[in-house]
Image (tube, rainbow, N blue to C red; front, side):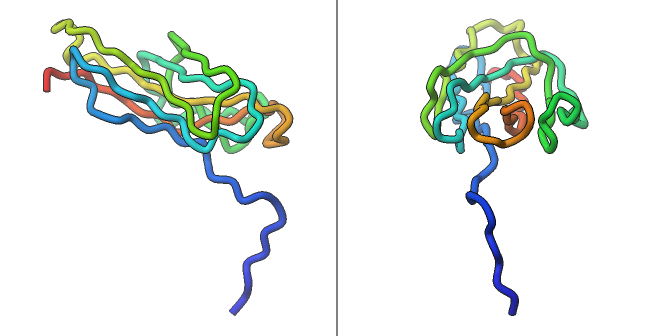
Length: 132
């Protein structure tokens, strides 16, 4: 049997997860995991439009990374730990039922030599607001 040869650091992909379903009048904890050590900034990017399939970010120096939603709002985490999170509070507003929001994580880490831009993107998470 052949042995695997690892030539660089074994790094897990940047990953975004939500703690609960998006029910109006509640809060959801969004957690970005596998943030590279030393990254100066991470972002949670919120959009109202889903991009499916995702748009390749290779043209801006991020090969293998994709954009999965529009970009209407951003929450920043300065000097994030390996895992960083933000609380997303959903108003108790019945008109929100049926509204969808797409969230994606991104990290800027120029010292990490991940790609030409020095940035990484996570998977996307789509919320469909409901009453329960």
